[in-house]
Structures are given as C-alpha cells and as structure tokens.
Length: 289
Image 1 (cartoon, rainbow, N blue to C red):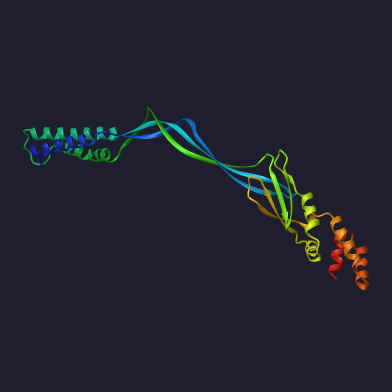
Image 2 (image 1 turned 90 degrees about the vertical axis):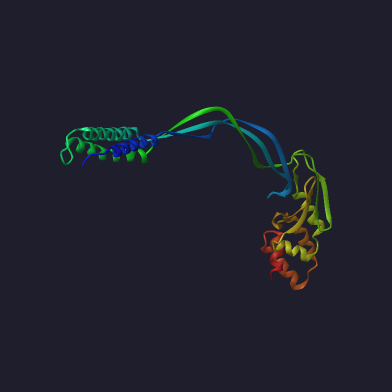
C-alpha cells in the first residue's frame, strides 16, 4: 500500500497545524509589592470619663481614651509576566519524526518500483509517522510555565484607620462631694486628682448611722452605700464595707447602748463585753443571742 498525493498533503497540513498550535502565550497581572512608607494623616480622640473608687477608698476620675489615626500607606506596584510554551523537546522530536516519516513515504511513492505491498521506505516512514504521535500529543497537552517579576515604578496608596484604647487617671484639681443619706461632705482634690475618702466616710457614718437598726446592719457586714461626685465625670454609687469602719465608732455606740439596758439584758451585754475582743464583736455577740 502506497501513500497517495492527497494523504501526503494531509500529513503536511497536520504538521503545519501542530506547529501553529504549539505557540507561546504570555499573560500579565499587577500585584502589590513592598511597603515603601507610612504617613499618619489625622488623629482623633474619644474620651469616656468614669468615677471610680479603689480598694483603699481613694476616689478618682478614670479616662478611657480611644485614639484613632488615619494612615496612608504606599506600596510599590509590580507586574508578573507569565509565559506558557509547549515542551520544546517533545515538539522538536515529534516534528522531526513526522517529517522523516513523510519524507520516506514520499520517496517511496515517487519510486518506480510497482511491487505489491509496502517497500522498506514506506514501512519506515509509517513507523516514524506513528512514532511522532506521542511527542506531538505531549507537546499539545503539556506546558512549560515561567514567571518574571517586573518593577513598574508605580506606587499604590492604601488608606486605613487604626484605633487603640488606653486608660489613665485625670490628674488635675477637681471639686468633689460625697453623700450618705442626707449628709454630705465636699472638698477639692490635690494636683493628682485623687481624694482619700475614708476620713469623710467615717464622719458621714457618725452623723448618718445612729439608730439601732442601721448599726445592726453594719455589724452583720452589710455595709452602707454612698454617692461620689467628681468634677467632669458622672456621679457614681459605691458601698462602704463595714469592716473599714474604726472600732471606735462601734465603741461609742456600744457604751451608750449598754447604759440603756437593765436586768438580765445588762448582764448578757456585760458577758459579751468579756468575750468580745472589740466593741463590734460585743454588739454582734449580744444581738446574736
């Protein structure tokens, strides 16, 4: 069997088509590069003032400040060029095998030998042509990919907002007032903006808590509420722990209270005075009976 002119023409066309389809392609994309510089543009503050009392009964104004800064950040701009191409080794091998096979088959067709069957040139040519299929298919289906990074010289700007919180004491002379029931004390803080409250609170207790029911609540450990107002901040309510009161306060009350008792009540009270280590314990002992 011999190759005809049309089959030879078809094979040549196929080779040309493979070569045309096996070209290179390049795509480009722009990406953000290194950060070049950062410039703060505008800063704003939002303050929240709060009246606080710590464990030692020192009052102060706490400032919770939220600071937000608008920042301009510049980045370099880069271009990534991606080039895809067929495996050149497979392409060259495939085209060479196909070309050699076509050449041999052409020589066989032009030969004057009219013997039946395929001669050696035709056989080799067909073998080479068939052998070109795998490398040519590989060249069409596989890709070699290379990427090149190119500096464009352009700059990309991004604006962002960064916020942070911090807490500090308002250090300035401030007017203050503390109220317990209907009794009130006022004054002015020092330069540090702090007011020690134990002394005025003890004075307020002396004035405001004089009846037996209220003293009983203190002895039982319930404490007593008070309101603190400091300039620039909203007023706030707190509680004085009865354990923070000096025993002298309970002693004065116990002396007056004991003198009013008589008979068995007086005897029980005196017995509690012997047992208790403080005036508060004496009252607690008597009222618990």
